[in-house]
Image (tube, rainbow, N blue to C red; front, side):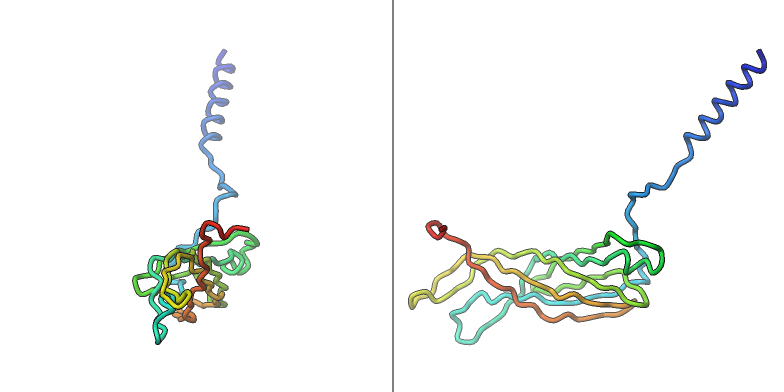
Amino acid sequence: MKRIFFNVLAFAAVLTFGASCTKEDPAKPLTYDAPERQATIYGTLLVNDDLTAAKQKYTGAAGVAIIATISYSDLSSGAGATSGAISRATTTNSKGEFAIQVPATEAGVSVSFTVNDLKGKRTETVGGSSKEVAGTWRFSIADQRVKIDQEKISDTVVGVFTPSKSSGDEV
């Protein structure tokens, strides 16, 4: 009887301790939060919203969301990460300016950008008179390569305007 009680108690202890052990989730993404291992990229997005002006004037594209993406393989340097990426996001200010901090290494990392479109209106000359045309500006920021503590200013990007289709324009 003592032997059965002891075996049941030992079995319960094994189950209790075995269940409390945790394993690292292999699907958990790599995190990279070391602030001392960062680089900063600055830039400006502009639009030309008045084509009727004698002298073209560009204004800041305010409120445009920008996502910078860095491959895990660039950050891991020998840790074996071959797929996946880490992203940082920011938004342009009222002047179209942005600053984004990204993780970096001594060897450098490649940063690619995804930029949201901006809907708005642009004044154009149509048939000899001024007319507001609704549409979308699209921006393309070139990939950048940065190293730890580097501050890089990317080229100013002017959005490409595409007028919205008005009813009757569909083919």
